[in-house]
Amino acid sequence: MMPEVSAAVIGGSGFYAMDGLTGIESVAVTTPFGDPSDVITVGILDGVGVAFLPRHGAGHRLLPSELPVRANIWALKALGARYVISISAVGSLREELAPLHLVIPDQLIDRTKGRPSTFFGNGLVAHAGFADPFCPSLPNTLYQAASDAGATVHRGGAYVVMEGPQFSTRAESNLYRSWGADLIGMTALPEAKLAREAEMCYAAVACVTDYDCWHASEEDVTTEMILANLLHNVETAKQLIRLAVGRLPARDCACPDALRSALVTAPDLVPDQLKRDLAPIIGRYMAVSNDE
Image (cartoon, rainbow, N blue to C red; front, side, top):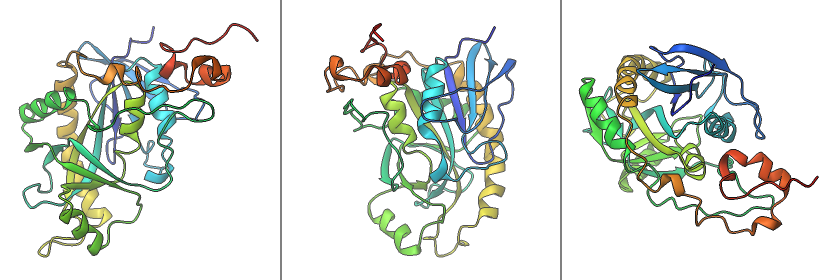
């Protein structure tokens, strides 16, 4: 029997498999939004049911712009995950956030273009709060786990999510620094928005691989540089996760009730097929009619 899933881990560049899982099952989930990035691995990690999904697919087949994020989050929610730990490679926009450091960010700036960022529409309107895009509790757990794993880790910071797949121009990199941003990457959005709509506790571990292209005394960012530094961070991230899943905080934050006052459309006006498609997301608020 498949373990009851409590936490989900989404692995970024270089993080394609989850170590330490027992009782492993590979689960192919069909969603109304297409297939997830890959088959989801479900198992037990130190007594906790964990679902692991490689964000870019095994072998890194998907661009950031191609990621089926709605399918990914829907699938993890449907499997029962209440917590999502996101691992991703980022560039640093601050001298003190050096390559090989980890950062647990607390804010996001959206510079993506045209990525589907909501489960809603087509007959159901919702406006979920997103002032604080990460769970207020889970990042504390990740920060402590990173410290205990021996990482140099920083708590807080604003993460710019750019479209990619190209890296920043020098002008863009300096513009983001002038905004007070701390990190730049390509994958935390719309992931965080969709996790909020799915009422999941979401937090990110940002693995610094480079100084983007603003730093006068450092080489301009290259894929080779990112991958070389990321391999060093992946092992630390895996150890961090093992420590964190055994310390998951109580869900006494606002995340589990993010939709309670967000759904605008009267339930009787919402198409039944849409209710069925979104049942893992809205099932506690809107029942599907038995009438065919």
